[in-house]
Amino acid sequence: MGRDRKGPCLFFMKIYSYLAILVFACISLIPPVDFVIRNPQNEYWLWMVLIAGFFGVFTLFIKTQWPVKLIANGALINCFFSSIPYVSFTSYVSVVACCYFYIVCSRVEDWTLILKALKAIVILQCLIMFMQYIGKDPLLNFGLLHVEHFGTVGQHMQAGSMAVILSALLITFNKYFIIIPLLTAVFCHSTWTLLSAGIGIVVYSYSKHAYLSGLIMLLLCTIFIGWASHQNKFSENMDSKSGRMGVWSKSFELTHKYHKDWTGWGIGTYKDLFNPLSGLGTHYRTAHNVFVQLVWEVGYIFTGCLLFALGGLVVALFKADLWLCLSGLAMILMDSQAHFPDRMIQCVPLIILFLAYCQFNLRRFSTCQAH
Image (cartoon, rainbow, N blue to C red; front, side, top):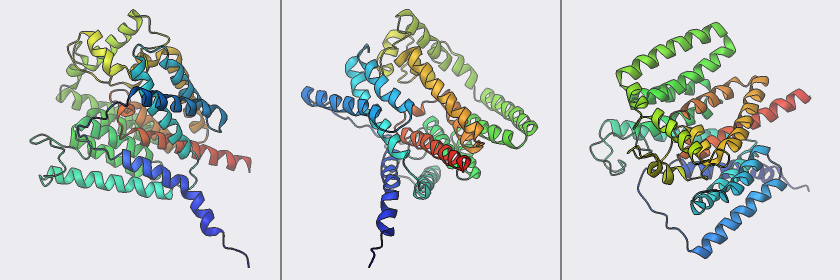
């Protein structure tokens, strides 16, 4: 009698789905509580870095996309040129972990379970937000009494960014999930969340009708300018000392002044170096712009390579007519211009998952084309 191999085969087909869910469900729900992770003793730290370095180099010998190999090995080399090597080598461990999480996600073939897990996160976020709104959240308020709370992340800008990243992935399954960041933008008074969601709508509407896309873009700009002006967002962002524009300008200025154009200051160093060097009197742990911070930390060459890879993904999605994926990518990129989703531990696995799902759809498109 032949054995029924269907059960074990299905399990092994879904093992990558289970691993992906385990990682992003745990990390994406980390609340904004203060906790300290003690640095390991020197000998353990060195061992940890060397193991991370091994797995970084090992990406050269496994099947994965070239940007992953570039990030894993380029970041390792960059650490040796860092202005704070200890910080950069420690940060490198998390970089390698992200690379391998992408490798796991890129091998997922059944996305049904992942979609259900993402929906569960959305429902939980909405439930906690609602309870916070009506004042029935005495335990999950993260110790922030008498201030506004927003979901599990506890801060309006981060809640908006979380909503954008979540919906960027969810709209690739169902376009109506775009309502999530729109509602969050209103609830959290986040103009950039509104703009990020609007860009996703514009990109998708362009696939249906270019003229309609233009009208939506005009309406979006009008609403954005009106809302931002009403909330004094422009004056806040343009301020040379405390606004985003001043921080961006100072970041480039310091990078040029200290001849860090090509290597950058080192990965993970922005939070330690920018404030004492800038003299702005403000405390910025991130640049509030993903690409400005990339230039600061890894320089123009590495940033240029990453932008080249990003451009290649945009072209591939466009050629494959994957407009919902393009819309999600546009939302993430727009959010990255004023927020810091790449530095939010809750958002990073979701971004990686989104990129892996884009590659899954591209592979499926290539297979259909081949047949």
